[in-house]
Image (cartoon, rainbow, N blue to C red):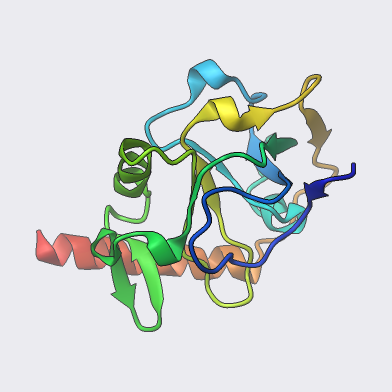
Length: 172
């Protein structure tokens, strides 16, 4: 598909919108439905290999498109008080689920949140305005052929989230 970005490393600097549509992926047990979007938004990643780590237990991998005019809140432009710094990494302050950041983005008129990502890994995103998800037909859905092995990325993220929960519990 022309004019579509298929994979991106963490995006630096302020960006009101993308220069071209962004192809993203999600793992879910049901197809994308704008009416079912929760307060944290719809979590997606720009790397198909990355999403395979989430495609367990009968989940499907779904390809979606974020409109190039979507207003994106990058990690660099997110107030750092919404994150806990753990070593050189950052985890969303609210036990790692990002609801606070998604609410901040929505309140400020953003459509998409691009969360912190360890260096070299594609950034996980949350679409907080489902109207920027576009598709001329039903989203492309691919069943997972085999259960993928837990990736190093997924193990690292789980470890960061566990650390964030411990910190949040201690702050009480």
